[in-house]
Amino acid sequence: MSNDVTIGIPLFRSEKYIKDCIYSALAQSYPFIDFLIIDDACDDGSVEIVSQIQVEHPRGKNIRLIRHVHNVGIGETRNHMIAETNTKYLFFLDADDVITEDAIQLLHDAAEKYQTDMVYGSHNQIDMTTGGHPVSLTIYKQRHFLLPDEYPTYVYRKYEGIQAPIWNALINVEWFRSTKLRFLPINYWEDFALTMDLATYTSRVVLLSNVTYYYYRHFDSLSNTNDSNKFSKEMIMKTIGAIDDVKQNSDRIKQKSYFPGRMVKVMMTDFYIVCNILKNKDKIQPSFSKRELRDIMKSPLSFWETISLKNRKPENLFLYMLGVLPPSLSVGIITILGKHKGLI
Image (cartoon, rainbow, N blue to C red; front, side):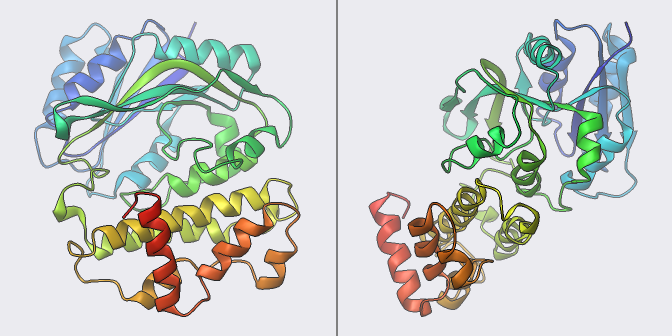
């Protein structure tokens, strides 16, 4: 049997973590795997470690290393992986994370049994900034979504419907390419817009209760915002831009029953971002004005579109109002609610 799964690892400044990551991929019990590593113009010793493993490991011959001349960011690197994958399935693995030995076997078995577009495994988050303690264990209830609109209805039913990152999902490549969706060319939340929209294109998804992925938060991770150096206005604006992309990409699903839930989820993401900005306002340079914070909450819907929604109207109307009220009043309400929720 030829290999039918690709594990794709984007590589950039991962010298401290890439060995553990690759060895967890090479240790898979499922035997039919290609390993695609794309070096996004690393300027540390990451590539040398990969090259050594290629030579020394029994499965090293199945590692394909592609090198970028210039750094293009993780979003474009993942897009490159989509183009380069030659197998039926693709699994994204971040270079500072690891997977369990049976991860691909479990995901592949479910994908073949149910002929899925995607299979998600459960995952554990480990915070290395606080001594390597587990901080979040996401265990999905074993679920099979095999009917049109069943999966997006589940995703948008509440804010925590499904993870935003693309990792830990075994994806059918032919289906993925058919959606025409691609990652945004940014380095943080580059997968949010894609995963939010991807749900609307699929009708066959399986969630597994098995933990297959360990996500690590390091001091130097892009996702670690505890480092005061990460609180730049430019990075935050790029995150907001990713959410705006989701806001504007909704016309084709406005008549779907799950659309109001999608709007709540997207607008609540903006709400949490504004709360985080307010919480860390002394660390952000340059600072945000109240008008800028209010404008983050702008809904893509008009007032009449909002009150015409068939469900979840009160939530959407309230979130709509936060984007049109006077800036001081809007930010004041967000501050009160954020403190009540323990976000500020």
